[in-house]
Length: 184
Image (cartoon, rainbow, N blue to C red; front, side, top):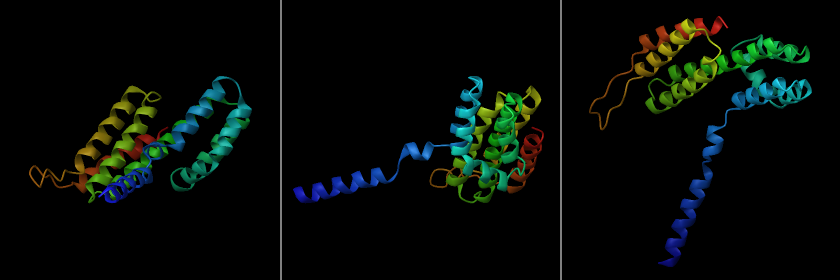
């Protein structure tokens, strides 16, 4: 009996260690933005350049998938010590992450839990970007992300209260999000 209890305890411990909540919450774009902003605010452009190089793969991915001007734009603005442009490109990197999560939500619209996580992450990035937006863009983006979240439906509890996903509503708001993000 003791052997069985030890086996179960070891199994549970290994299962818990297999999933790291810290790793699941890591967002390289957020970490990089915070570190670069800290460096730039302290006029430490060498540090900003070092952080940029450390997260180069993240910026290349966002560049290749969402905004082909991002990588060179951010790199050049750091090398030129142009604080205003650095902040703009960092905002664009966050906008790319919003687009990435909105795309993922649509691709997984039939998988409620996956789509819900994607939209929660899009909202997380939106909150970071919102401080840089004017009132109109902020309200438009916030409303469109909420409408996307509402349009993924809900499986209900054992089917009770289930609501089907509305792909057309999602696509309509996805386009609004893309339009607002393209204006950054």
